[in-house]
Length: 362
Image 1 (cartoon, rainbow, N blue to C red):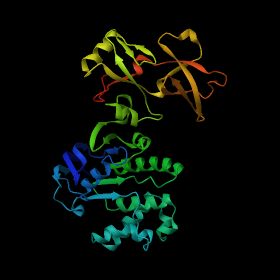
Image 2 (image 1 turned 120 degrees about the vertical axis):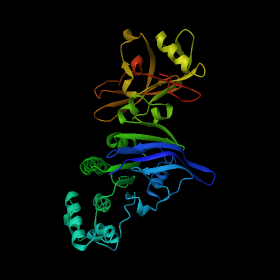
Image 3 (image 1 turned 135 degrees about the vertical axis):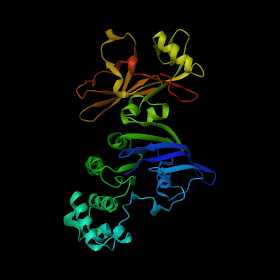
Image 4 (image 1 turned 45 degrees about the vertical axis):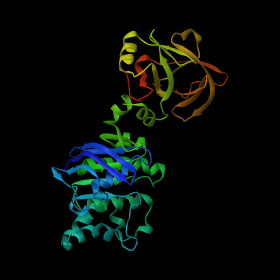
């Protein structure tokens, strides 16, 4: 097995910079997720590792070997595509055997390896079928099997679960993560689904417009986002943001409400900021909602706009002036006859970002 390193990698398509000076490392046996919106450069980065695209700048290493000038077949990686890319005229057995046949593996060894992988993926009963006779989940397992049977140094996966229905996708997330740990193969996985990234990755690399925004374990990405983009992209519902002025008296003035800060926190933020203009962020799960006006210290009024019952929780959509604020509450929180509520942002749960740069201040 092997680690994968990208050092200062840049890839352009004409005047468009798809990835810009990208530095990443997936350690041996790691499950690294490349996360970001469409067009952020994550698939381009994966294709550069595979050798399907050639970067104009930078170096790509698999293990300790520089692979920039190696053909895809020489890099010892296996790629699983979004479309599965199975051969429709071949049986499952022949689809699994195909990469081994190209490697001129003896027939008895091919038979042994194919049946071993089929057993691992629980598709032994499907070996005689053709892809059109399989469900989406079964096709996905065959595509994985075709990658596994080669015993590569690295798995590269480009949104392999996106064509599955929601229930099967959740099931296959767990199966794929378990399988990767059993095989111990370094895996780089591309997705735009932040839930998928959080549940599967040992580390997450978040990309936007070709630039790396943050590279950390899932818990740190969620709890300590590096900038406004990461805070808004990771987490559901997304983070609430308020444009504020950080006054000299340690008060955040959002026009619609005032939020007092401890003096040491305000000093730390002011020291790091480029100006007094900042962005206050708070996750919906951290917004405290009250019906009782007696707890108004540090609170502000909010008008109930609508509710979104989800069974295990309820999301309140609240209006604070021009801001629509989302708050996650217990499903038994009764609001039918209440049109005004108090909301509070705990000081240890807020984020402050520089409005100009978007970078986290505290």
